[in-house]
Image (tube, rainbow, N blue to C red; front, side, top):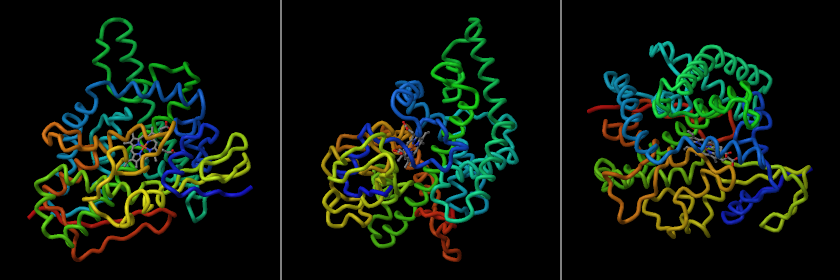
Length: 400
Ligand code: HEM
């Protein structure tokens, strides 16, 4: 029983595509992650993924970026602009909370700050479940935190949201409501398919909670890393300070480069379903753990150049190579929210007015447009409790 690590870029890519390897990163976090999309394998995974991909109909990204996102960003900014300051992690969590809740299908009928705070604390509790395997302290204490978050989520948010969707679907079935008037979210898709493909109410609860978490947590950390890199870059390259104000495609390049350097999960982890030869020549059995080191693969000089470990938004890569490396995974578990978070990769012919930028870039642009800069009196602090590269707090100033 050993741990086999794959850290070459090409080899990591190929390893993630092997059908003989199944998910094992979330074994410790079963309370939330048991049989959610990212922990399923084989046919069950394929059926669930196809079902959930239905949300991305043709105009979905345009609808999301032009209709859902601006209102959420403005409301979040309105909270902080009068004080002239925010913490990037708090700003990101509040913005992503609403965006991802809308995407997942979690209603917030009261629309109050108390309601958002309750959901925020649930989000933090669910986050504990997903990262339990990397937690260095007492895991039992944290497991209880995650269990409480899931139970609060169930009673206050999930059940009423699922019930409202059941009623709307009944209205559609009775011909009193048009199908396209249904909410465009994951929960509506799941409730519509309840009982099919093994979807029990418990599983729908965990799946909705997982989506809420998968969308929000990853993007919050990515936004803070990206803003940090942009601050560092413009301090060292004052000639680009104006460019970040005026060139949204350049800001997206910065965000993609930051995604590459700071994948929100530094590793993917798999368990062989049978003895398997890995593409880098190593062999593994079902007793072994295969770790795919996304962090180091994304910094490999042979794939990204001699300065691979440095932030360089002018990096030139072959067109087939994603600028964010394998940060969004590869193969059957490739991130379903990648386009939502990262947008399209721009080309020389891209029109900035119609381009799809992705949530993280759009949040970064909103912060930049509002004078976001490091707070000289309050240094940012790293998160020390988990074995991942993350910020705990990142105080910034806003406005003139
Ligand atoms: C910066 C933002 C994000 C990053 C870096 C990220 C990263 C990842 C990675 C690495 C995986 C694959 C895990 C594995 O192979 O073990 C994944 C899977 C997934 N992500 Fe994301 N993600 C992000 C945002 C989102 C968003 C916004 C959503 C949804 C709204 C989302 C939904 C999912 C889902 C559903 C899966 C599971 C796919 C499957 O197993 O078939 N992610 N993500």
